[in-house]
Length: 464
Image (cartoon, rainbow, N blue to C red; front, side, top):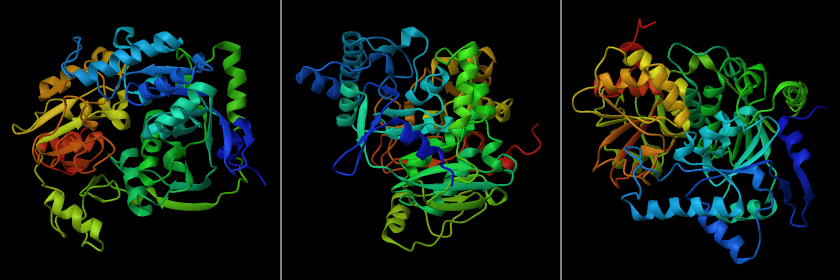
């Protein structure tokens, strides 16, 4: 009987089995940012340790950095302190830092792949829950806490228990304007926010195979929102073509050698799984959340379900929606396109395609925030920034921006945001009463234009 990718990668990186039953795994790539690394560096400094493999650790800044300017010191003294800490720590320990002056700064889960650091068959760790993103390359990628960041810095290994593997097959082709964001919201809706606890999710099927690398990253990014700490896709020619020519990807003959290895770590045709779930792509339509976790979402043609538990009642009360309501037509105040989920060049190309020649509704504040300097530069080279600006969007510098409340981009009061980010928790976007509706980039564009949640297929129907 064959093995799946998770089993193969785990075995290749296993240092030893521990008496506790857990495993000590070698981590091939460690990504750090300014929020969860300062305490970890302080701990290894106190212990008199060094960074074991500084050439396997890469840093960027994303959560706290302002997106409306780069003047130093930052107005937020805590943000400035974090920035100074990562500058000092990376310099002291000899770690490559993609700072704003490098021209490669951006959201950690966008910078790693676009630099070619993330490669198939790797183990990847980062002190951020959305590290699952890197699984799109056939890597096993874990979001870790600060103490584990310390462990990886000091030993390049971490202690972790193995997971079961659930194969999630998306059969058939996606419909018009249905994206990978809609797929993952649909999956989480069906399996629940805790449905993946203890599992790694292997995404496969015709719909996944036909996705670009950027769409695959969006899919894996939100595996964590379904409770799975790991989400991955077997590497294929789409993966290899994306990596070719990236700064840190192998070159020439070495690339071809690696390609053969990368193919070998894909799941075998007769691989065994602990669970298999199949979805029909034709049943997935543009999605929108109505509640306070990513499970609470519906297709745009559906109505908010009647509450069957206290969490749903709590959500309706917080969101000020009613059971039976349609989300289509719900007025929005803010539109945000960006984040590690949908801040890639493909997301801006898609939104710009439909925004061209249109205007954002007068009452809507709209932000377009590239996920990295590379995304920003490419978008500007293609004239996408002009499309966004002419439509009425603010075109910003790279960062996490309005995904979360660690920088100046925040909701006010009980504003409603149509957001391409990944979490709709209470207060997630900076106001204790602010409300977040998770959508795809094309749904966000439709909401910005209409001034309310809209079916993008109706708003943009006929656009080629």
